[in-house]
Length: 165
Image (cartoon, rainbow, N blue to C red; front, side, top):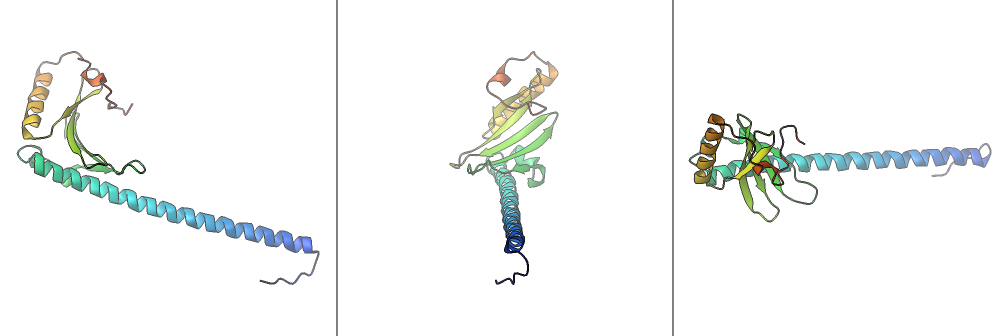
């Protein structure tokens, strides 16, 4: 591009430099918007995949219990942390009990119940199959019928608390 200089060259140079910097700023903004749109698409895909995997896991490994009360609509999926390629979904079961599905990057998957502890934290209970879930449900019924003080099972490194602390 050739510009005809009619005044002092420094004035034209200043104008051209500002225009160039504005072009660079606009390009950077467009690139950032494209990066954000791609990240949003990836997160949405991961969320959908997390829900699909959770529902499939329950259908396969807990067909007599949890599969009869949870559908894909019950699950809330979450995107993985950057570069971890994990899949996580949670479903409320009522009475402050949650089902938590997690698939690690290596493909290992697990389902846990998060059970409220009298101290306000949660106890994690692995439920790989219908049998283990049935035992966990009996424990919940027992805790509700005869509440006991905290046994400290919840403080075993569990990050789950009702308010997200």
